[in-house]
Structure formats: structure tokens, C-alpha cells
Length: 365
Image 1 (cartoon, rainbow, N blue to C red):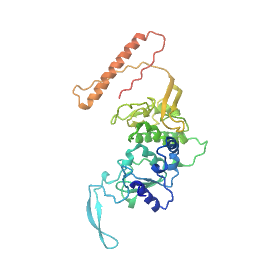
Image 2: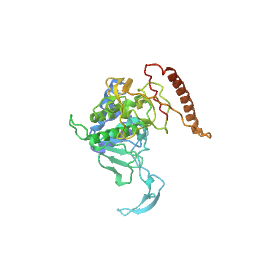
Image 3: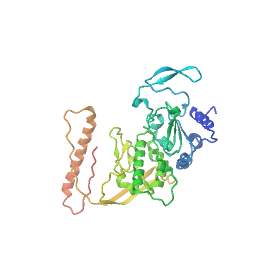
């Protein structure tokens, strides 16, 4: 026991107080020095969280050596007043001004900044959420704070209760419910991509358990983070301009997959669709490990058939009085315009040919 980290010791204490005989700890139950063992356990993590009696989430712990139990200071600013206790003694009560900041929100907790930890709260039916300012119990219906203290649902990443309902093998989703599942998947990707991870090559692997959970509802092949039957809508992902990052140095996924970049992801609602005048001829990927069906890929191909149109692109003019934040965009526009001019000149030279020319689909952001 003395060699265990403080986080694990606190988890053992919680398990005993809850009257539960068994405790799963990733660091102890997964062979960290065996790639084969880790691959097997990664595929089982979905079932571990989904079938656990309760998942203890050390939300306020920034590392495995930090304890998550103990007295919690009330969030400031605050002031205290005397309060008569039922036993006759005089205690104190902390008060805050009523308003939005008086409520606890989980979005800034250390655990909600780590990508690997998203599956803990999403796939677990019941969660004991040990936060910075409160102890919170979450399940598929209510959320209860210790002693009914105030809280906000902001930052609470949870799946709807019907996701966990027993399903018949041949049961099909209604069109309305299907849109709900697709929009929920988009919300999961938005929450997942705003988190950070040390090894970005594991982005698809860390999401594998959640993807497998969704596959039981969508029942369509999973290709590099997208669902094949809904690929037209899903390739329209957008990167947030507030947190743009450099391109990955190594190949992770094809360019039409959101895993090919390291920025936060956004989708329009699944109901916001346009009629597509093309069909999918092929949408395939090559898995890095055949044992992790929803994991990393080494190659991918998306072939479409449809009509083509020539697109003329003219970048908007910038205000001559630019700011420092505009320098990057000015450089992008200059290089993009030069590349487009070369390609259009080449198209003009070759447009007399009978062979159809490819369409350059240019996206400006």
C-alpha cells in the first residue's frame, strides 16, 4: 500500500466506504509494458466503464500522485457569517453574490482537459465526480451535488439515457432518433478535440471505446473517425479558428478525416443538409492494428462520382491598416492566391483538351 500513489489510495478508500468489493485501476490492471496486452484492454475499456457499478472520477486531480479527497475550499469571492448549529455551537456559513459565477461548472477541471478521460464519464452509467469545489453524483437522470449545493451543467459530458437502453439486434433507428445520434456524435467530437493529449498519434485509439459504443446504434462501417453511411455530412467538419495548430509531422489519417489536424472541431447540425449530387464509390481505410477495429489507420481512400464545375476564387481585400493578428492571414491569402493563379493558368492552357479536367475544391478559412 505504501508504494501506491495517493490517487489510488483515495480510490481504495472510496470503494470501501461504498461497500464495493472490487476496484479497477488502469495503471494496475493493464500491463503497461506489453503492447499486445494494452491493445486487448483498450478494446475492452468500453465494457469496463459501461458495466461498472460506479466510476470514481478524480476530476480535481492533476496527476496520479495528487489526492482528490479532503476538504474543499468554497469558490471565491465570498464572505462568512456566524451560523447557529443544531448542537448549540456556533459555526460559519460562506455566502456569495447570486449570479452565474455562483454555480459550479466542470469545464475547467483537470480531468476535462485530457482526451483519454472522456470515455470515463461518457460510457459510465453512474459517476462519483470528485471535483475541486464539490462532490457530485451523476447518473443517466439526475445530477446531485453534496448537500444540494448549487451547480451548473456546463462542462458535463454525458450521453442521453436511451443510449444505454437494451436494444434488439434488428431494431432500426427512426429518422428523428438517427439525427439525434449523429448530432450527439458531433457533440462528442467537439468535446473530444478541445481536450489535449501527450501523444497525438493516439487520437483515434483514445476514442475507440466511444466509437464502438456508437457503432451499435449507427450500424455502419467506421472509417478514420467518420461513419460511412453519413460521410457526405461528416466530411463537412470545420476547424475552430481560435485554436489553429500546425499540421502533424507524421501521417495519422487521410485529409478528409478530422484526425488529420490538431484543432477543435465543429459541425453544422445533422438536419442542416443539402441534396448531394454525387455518390460514394469507395470509402476504405487500412488499420494500424487489426485487433483495434476502431483505432489508428495507416491509409485511407474516398472516391466519389459526380458532376464538376469550375470554381473561380478571389480572396477579399484586407483593410490596409492591419493588426498583428492579420499578418498570418495576409500570408495565407498571398500564397493561396499565387497557387490558384498558377492552377487557373494551367487550366486555361489545357481547357481545349477533350479529357475532363479535375475540379480544384478550394476552401478558405
